[in-house]
Length: 255
Image (cartoon, rainbow, N blue to C red):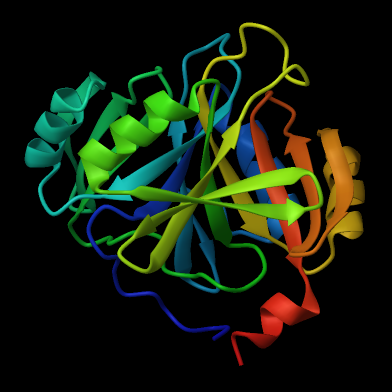
């Protein structure tokens, strides 16, 4: 329901996204202009935390990073390593907000682990200008299925999002927690495995137009899909992210 505050997330589910920016000022101007967020170390929407921002490495493109909720960041790091992943930044406290670690899956896709402190994750969801989907973008589906199954007990379910367009969802028990896209010849050779964050918007075409006005670029779209109108965008610092205006049929399931 719009306007409500999300209080927490089940273990091993995507819960938070953070933007690593070479220039935090440029990132703040772009994302506040695009989504109406109030900028800061934590972007907010109507006073609710929606995403984080941290300084990136100078000269490196900006990048969105997804986080998975962890009852214990230390324990989950060990589980990730046992499953074939690696550690980029060991567990560390983030003020009073929580305890975080940066890890990779078995193919090198980077993501974070988040153990809640004062912040359990994104406090707004299921409304425009909030994170609505995360997916692993990978070359080797079997490697990803093996890794995420061992690390988080995720299992895959395949369907078609449109005729001839495969769609893979991750499940824990009967809950959908995210998705997976398998790269093919449409991706440049050597594109690294990565996580992709998608934000809900009210109007995809208007968001695409606003993105270009603010100095961003359109990679893909807008595409009309059964689930809604989707586009893959790039911000002025090279960070890519998806936006989707959900279909009336999907929105009706929230009522």
